[in-house]
Length: 334
Ligand code: GLY
Image 1 (tube, rainbow, N blue to C red):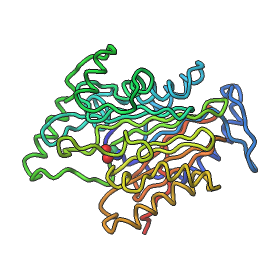
Image 2 (cartoon, rainbow, N blue to C red):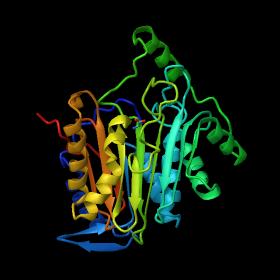
Image 3 (cartoon, rainbow, N blue to C red):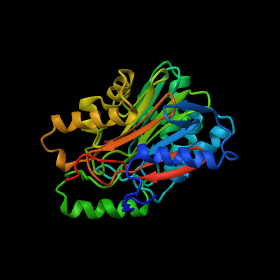
Image 4 (cartoon, helix red, strand yellow):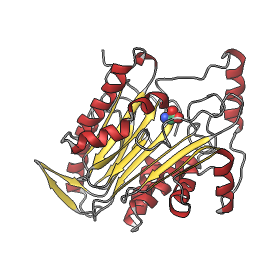
């Protein structure tokens, strides 16, 4: 996965249409698709489905395969996100993530499962798979969120290996940034910073996960939205799930993922709900031209949606045996 990706906007144009294409593909590739088919409107939605922020086809493929092997939606997400966390060339999650302004790589991640259980770590150093540690927090502690040294020590006690997560490439980028930045973090609108992934298994059970190194060159101790439930991720197994990417401060202020799930509860499609959540951010932030926020969502039937403030956001959907990354629709079109 490259940090800077400019892929031609897919002719299909929107995730909604892309899902339609996936559905057609599904009909043509029945052999590959052993999933249940749930009738919906004038089409058919294939379960299982995996959807993630950004162009992370290797990650969604891994998650899809884990689902086909009979793993739970949550374990599939841990496996899928783990692909990118272990990718030292990626500079947004896990090893190789861009550091804070002191040069420390600090990671945030969370998971939420079909039972509404939640686990998270924030500001954790030296452990490249924070999403797997978040699951351990959820399953093996009486708490839901561990921070910093406590999270790291917990991870080590569970067998995770301490590693230097600052790669040469990320160290060089940080050193370059220090020359001119005056310690201002980079708030960009075209590069991604977070992998959020949602999965619905063949029985319609939903889980989600979100993992990030956060805002590049952030202040020491800064925590964004990704590990904060309701902001970076929310799952309600009766309704659906949503997850976010982009400037965490803005997602936190509008509790975007919870909002999307609640809007779906009120009858909005995943696409409509993502669009409304982005509009809430825009309405509250006069400087919305200067940052990116993007959401993805899925409902219980496997319908998906995605929307962002700016062009450049991508989402990958693996559904009906087809793994496809597209640029979703976006707000700031003109
Ligand atoms: N969305 C990731 C962060 O702001 O930390």
